[in-house]
Amino acid sequence: MSEETWLAARLIPTSGINGAAEQERRATSALLAVMSSVREFGRALTQRFGAPAGQLQTYIEVPFPHGDKQCIPDGLIRVSRGRRQWTALVEVKTGGNDLETDQLERYLDVARDHGFDALITISNQIPPVPGQHPTAVDKRKLRRVALHHLPWSEILTEAVMQKEYRGPRRSPGASTR
Image 1 (cartoon, rainbow, N blue to C red):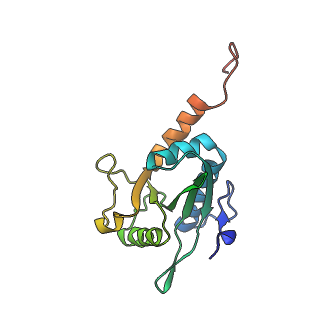
Image 2: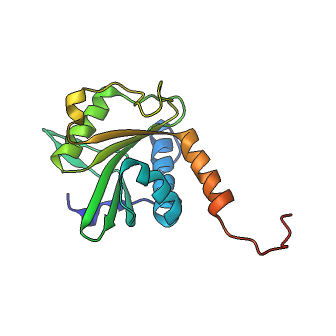
């Protein structure tokens, strides 16, 4: 499938809210849309994974062939700066849904096959140790593709920090009420 047919992330997705899959799709689309629209926020979330500072593009549910099936990660982030491109697949879980080893390993294979840099997972799971992923995967799958995790709580913390410390500046003496 060519990039021209990829669906750009939208702040207000048009999909329904019937079940967990729709909730994940809407959350993914809104988050990725904000990341690409609010440059500092997108940069703050991607730089920790080795992405360059640059133009950030986000897409949802990009299909990739994988064996005799199609594999559809929740999202894709691409950061471009000059000739350098950094690309990551994104897998999102909301509520109490846990990340699944088999699914992550398939996405790591797809990322490797397409020369992508990383797979980023987002969920409410908290890693046992900072920097460690909450889901065990075959270490051989991590030779050419990095696996990173962002808990939703960390994304919320970054959003608050962006708002409070990097948001619009008030003029001296302006009321904060």
